[in-house]
Image (cartoon, rainbow, N blue to C red):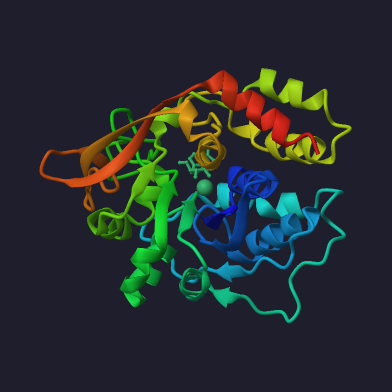
Length: 309
Ligand code: AGV
Ligand code: CA
């Protein structure tokens, strides 16, 4: 029996790469994809999501549109990247949207997919958690259908990656976009596994990785993903401007959990300045699992192997 997975992403380049990656995993059945308008503008991001389903021959998988906007907006230069993705030669001539032209609302698609699932579902989130929280507020009984939530978010024992006004730099962006929903999610005490900056800091997108990927571009997915990653290099160098395998690492957790070191901790979320969106350890907090380390060599090899098709 394949593992059922529902994915919510926010259209950044590594989110789109993660959507492709999850579709290469043989023992996983992706039952739906919802998009959050956080690190993307929603229309071009849905177009990218649909085109990537087509690349994998999986355009029957339903897509949901997030219409809820968080509290702290992402920089617009980051949000605009799916426009470039949609214009790449392998994608530009593919149909833009399913027929009939209408996307379901993301929380409704989450509710329907969880209700209809024949087994418990793993929810993979690589953007903010607002859509899932909205769905569970509307249908709290569906908590029982969730096997695990795997979420790229947070920074527990390391600095965050938000650098802006009224902020001390302690938060990670996916939490900062909607700290209130994050607080609600943590307080639900679902089986929740964070893949935070503590572990993603160990896996930057390196030139060595990209040049190895380039040696296998006779494979369609190596060629396409190499082009995706090249578009992120305008953010190098410097910590804030370095691109990491954030979402890709979280997605890989589904296939290789044994390669991660994890800890069960008690944690809380701040919702106010100067540290809005900070996730911190606190003995009086809520139980969550956090990944703290990964076998990074194994991880890079795994990605190179999955994109050999
Ligand atoms: O904080 C990491 C999250 C991940 O889900 N995103 C990017 C990944 O999709 C926000 C982010 C942090 N730094 C960024 C980000 C950057 N330099 N460019 C785009 N997005
Ligand atoms: Ca993301």
